[in-house]
Image 1 (tube, helix red, strand yellow):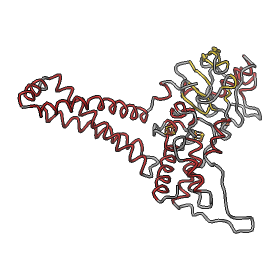
Image 2: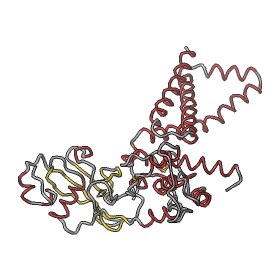
Image 3: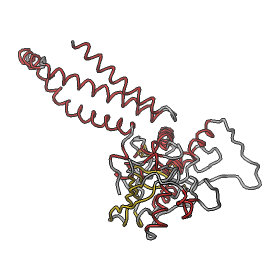
Image 4: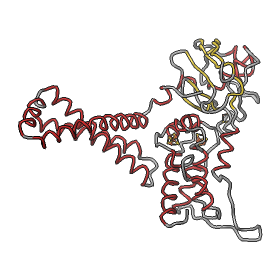
Length: 115
Length: 257
Ligand code: SF4
Ligand code: SF4
Ligand code: FES
């Protein structure tokens, strides 16, 4: 028999989920990112129109979500590296809280910069 | 409360003498891999454990119920089950702590074949301890003097952190990777290997590292920490597994593996 969601309902498992989901989302975003960069190479006019499009509030919000994902994935990655390479025992929850804190702080900073 | 040689829950008079708080609706798994939950009404008592509830059902309502226990005090590791979806030792889990309202759902451990009802086949679980080279190999004979291991040494402290395992299988049942990858050695066997890897008297270290390295060994762990979250003895198999990964890496860099 298999476990269901009740067995997975604890902070470390949420951390795993956030890391996995943000990783997948970032992978999906990458082609779009390269496409935008490719536009820049194609000439100023196309980039201009793209940048104008990217100035809409909804797109701005999506950008903010991306930064949050990136920050969460990075902080989660650092957390994992620390769990794997340091001789930890009792402070893994502190580490988790730290990772969550860092990712939210980075995203908020970005948001402040935007406005 | 009257103290007696027999636990009070086994005696009709003792049960009658207590005021029932409410009635628990207890869903218990009946069958093997295929089966269904059956509901029983069990009087809810003060300080009742989940094992008390199962025992009540077996002794009074349905003697055909299969389950396992021995010590009742958290030592033997034989009473683990899945309680309201979470793997737990039942003899030291109070109903008050886990009941959702007045309901309990009791199922066998996950990731192990079900023999019948609440009893799982633990063969695989213990075979994996052997596969992880979980036995001590010393070089001394009875003619040698005692080995001295300083209590404050790093190795001894690491052993202490993992040595109290009672082999209950809770971590193994909670581990997602065991579900994904049935040949994964699992948290308990690897925790055992880690305690031996830190035993300065042991002389089979290289062989053990070879046994725990690789895809079915420590490298399969995704650091979900399900095991660490659920181990009733407060052990962190995840920490031990991470330690094994580091030892394997070191040995590989030195070309010993
Ligand atoms: S930390 Fe590793 S061993 Fe423990 S539950 Fe997760 S995957 Fe399994
Ligand atoms: S490590 Fe903990 S949960 Fe796993 S078998 Fe040992 S005591 Fe049980
Ligand atoms: S019956 Fe022995 S640990 Fe629960």
